[in-house]
Each structure stands twice: as C-alpha cells, then as structure tokens.
Image (cartoon, rainbow, N blue to C red; front, side):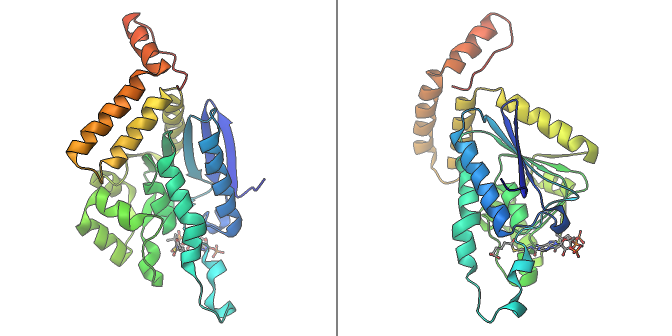
Length: 262
Ligand code: T3D
C-alpha cells in the first residue's frame, strides 16, 4: 500500500492523512490512486462510519504537483481534462455521495484543488494558521475539484469571483466568518477536536446522518415542493431504522443511545 495517503481505522473513523509533506501534500499520480482506493473503501466498508481527512506536516494540500507538469520537459500540450476525469472529479463525487459524515481538518495551507477538496467535505475545521488559496489563476487555470460550483454556493458570487480571479490567500478565521468552513481552532487543538468530532459522528445514527447530508446537498438544486417530498421519503426511511427505535427508547429510559449505524 502507498505511503502517500496514510490510512487508519479507529472507533469507526477512517482517518486519511495526505502524506507528501515535502511537497505540501500536492498530488502526484500515486497519491491520486491511493486517495481513490481509500475513498472506495470508505464507501464499501460498513466498519467505516465517518471519514476524517487531513494533511501531514505544515500544509494540508497544495493541489496538483506542478513538478509533473513542467512544460519545459514536454513539447506536447497536456490534457488536464483527463486528470479531472480520472482523479479529481471522481474524488469529489465520492466525498459528496458518501453516506457517512466527512470531516476535514485543515492543518495548514490549502491551495488549488487542495482547497476545493476541503470545501467538498461536510464539516471543515481549520487550524488558526491555515489559509486557503484559489491558486489556479496564478498559473492560467480555472478553479477545479468543484471549486467554481462550491465557492459561489458557500460564500456568494462576489466573494467567489474575487478569490478565484485574484488568487489572494484567505486566512482561516475569515473563511469561517464568511461561512466557507465550519470553524477555526488553535493549531494544537486541531487534531484533538477534529478526532473527537469524527468519533462522535461515527458513533451516531449513520443512516440518518447520511440521509441528512444528502438532503442538504440536494437543496442546492431542488425547489421547495419536490424537496418536501424528498424529506418525507427520507424521514420514512429513517423512521424504520433500528437507530431511530434506539434513539427514542434511550430518550424515554433517560440513558445515552447506543447507535449501530442502521
Ligand atoms: O492535471 C492538472 O494539472 C489539472 C489539475 C489542477 C489542480 C490544481 O490544483 S492546479 C494548482 C496547483 N497548485 C498551485 O498552484 C499551488 C502551488 N504552491 C504554492 O503556490 C505555494 O507552495 C503555497 C502558496 C501553497 C505555499 O507557499 P509556501 O511559501 O508556504 O511554501 P513553498 O516554499 O512554496 O512550498 C514548499 C515546498 O513545496 C516547495 O518545495 P522546495 O522548494 O522546498 O523543494 C514547493 O516547491 C513545494 N510545493 C508546493 N506546492 C507545490 C509544490 N511542489 C509541486 N507542486 C505544488 N503544487
């Protein structure tokens, strides 16, 4: 197995650590493949009830490894669409369709696709010292990994355009104030707090949490009328889960619920 993405399953949390710290965890081919394998596993393995994504060293992820894109080493123009089809787009789809909570602990700079992978996660907690950079325009590219979709939805067109066109770094606290991420914490508190949150969610009613995530995502593109029907369908499904019965029983018995995820 590749060391470019460290994976550890503990207490229902699959912790994935992007691990090319010398290159600020930018993506080479091997890291793309390793992340893909772990995201597939997260989908398939019932033992995985939450995903926690972070980076090794001082950065979270600096997007594509530009060392692999050196125009001086090739006479042919690259087909970057192929990288998106092969890697970034499947990764974003796998994160968004995972029926389990995805927590992102942004430990340092998140640039290019690295920033937009974070924004595809369900709950983003950032270290106070982290920053987000839509680095694409510095090198003549467009935001990818879903950034041109997620940014305007999260913070509105005005801020999305300014960030993407200028590539100015956004500090973590401003990102939180704008609603781009959930919150910031002191640097040394990042992994303890993100782990505690991930473990709490992993011990939760996974089926209901997965449906909740789906509903909120669908709201971006649905009208109220059809969305009310979707809520009804999801509530019907949640109401038939073992975890709902356990939740209500535990409430009536004045004890903590013991959810099993179905
Ligand atoms: O297929 C496709 O290509 C299409 C997909 C595109 C997706 C994308 O993500 S495009 C955007 C690519 N990313 C960037 O443009 C960001 C490039 N990096 C930076 O601008 C800066 O490194 C940061 C602002 C992120 C951090 O700056 P700083 O000063 O804190 O660190 P640094 O000194 O620049 O970086 C530390 C090392 O990491 C350095 O290596 P060295 O000199 O110590 O040997 C640097 O070269 C390396 N590094 C950082 N980012 C990348 C990288 N090496 C290769 N690729 C990188 N993206």
